[in-house]
Length: 275
Image (cartoon, rainbow, N blue to C red; front, top):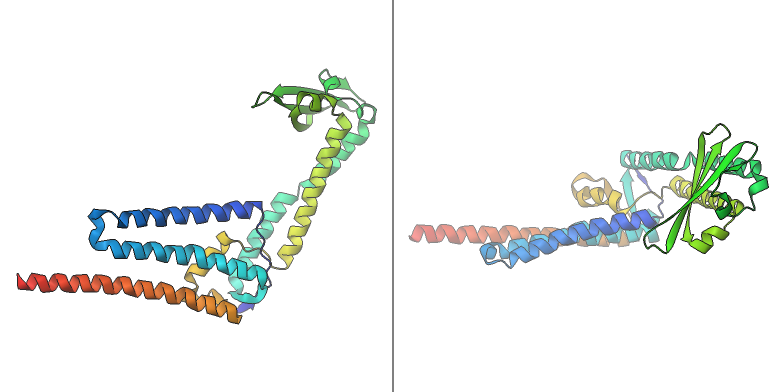
C-alpha cells in the first residue's frame, strides 16, 4: 500500500548543514577514488575506479538532491510506501515534541520571575554584581571576559529566597553594553527569544501535519534503493524523466564497467593459452 505525499521540504539551518556534510563526505570519497585511478599501481583498473566515482556522484549526490528540489517545487512528484511515511513522520514528531515541550513552561517561569521582581527591573546589570534581595528571589550577576578579550559574558543567577538556583540567563557583548543593560531588558529578551522559538516549532508542526518532513539525509536511503525496493516511485512526468535518466546512466556505466572487466579477463585468458 502506498500514499502520495504532499511535501514542502525546506532547508533549515540544521538541514542545510546535514545536507552539506553528507554531500562533502561523498564528494571526498569520489575525489579519493578518482585520484587513485591516476595512480600507476591501479593502471589496469583506471576505467573501473573512475566509473565508480562517477556512479557515486550521480547516485548519492546529484539525483537525490534533484529529487529534493523537485519535491520542494511539486510535492506530488513522488510516492512513498505507507510504512516508510508513517515511520519517518513519527520520528520527526517525536523530535518536535522533545524539542518544544519545555518552552511554554520556560516562558511562564521567566514571566513569573519578571512579575515578582518588578522593583529591580530597571536596575542595570552592573548594580546586580552584589546580591539583590526581593520578596521571593535573590539576584546576582557575574561578568567575565571571553575570547576575544574585549567581549564579555554576563551570567544572571536567579535564586529562590531559600538559596535554590531557579534560573540562569546569559548575555554577551562589550563591557559598556552589558553594564547598561537592565535586568528587565535581559529577561524580556529571553522571553521574546523563547516566544519566537515556540512560534518556529508551531510552524514546523503545521509543516509536519502537511508531511513536510523529508530532508536530503532522510531521503537518501530510499532514493538509492528505490529501483530495487519500490519504496519511492516517481509520479509526475518530470519525476519519471529524471528517475529514468538516473538509473539509465547508473546502469549504463555499471554495464560498461562489467564489460571492461570481462574484456580484460578474456584477453588475459587468450594470452595465457598462447603461452
